[in-house]
Image (cartoon, rainbow, N blue to C red; front, side, top):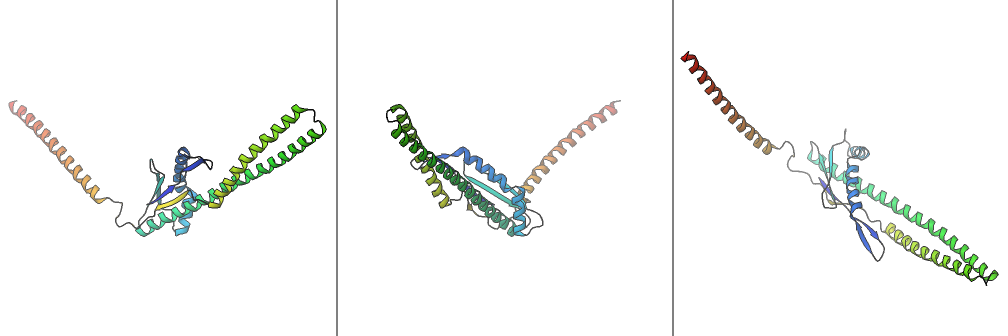
Length: 232
């Protein structure tokens, strides 16, 4: 088995940060499902040269940011290689998706900034024209001024988000990372001989006691029947 960590997502700004635990839990379950999905297992099968994909289980560990991926098979070397290869596939997938998502956010914010710049330019031109042509209309001038201020505030907030998104895109922080890689197991997980022997002893004892009780009941019944026959 190998253990991976899904970093808790953060929300907020440069001066205030909070951890989105609910989203992190969803992300844990999502990667656990991806680990056992058909396309991922097919890629694993191809990369390690198997005739069929190995048996894989993925479990999100409660109250942690961890996922444990367990691979079972007849070869100790093969299962450890499969577990580590599967973790590599998941980390690469995570990095690719994270890069695409960050780039999409940067592109959307950039487009909105360009739109706001055009709106601000037009609003300033209208304000200047209004001041020149209708200087006595103070209400319209004040309204146009407030409109420019509102757009400028929106632009500055959006610009801050845009810069933060660009920084996050440049950093390229992986959401998924390997905490504990798989090692070659020294003992088999199945069959569990000690458990099977213990269960066999318990079943044997239980069966023996049951048979002894049954024979005792039958013996009493036979004796009782024999006595009745003798009396007759």
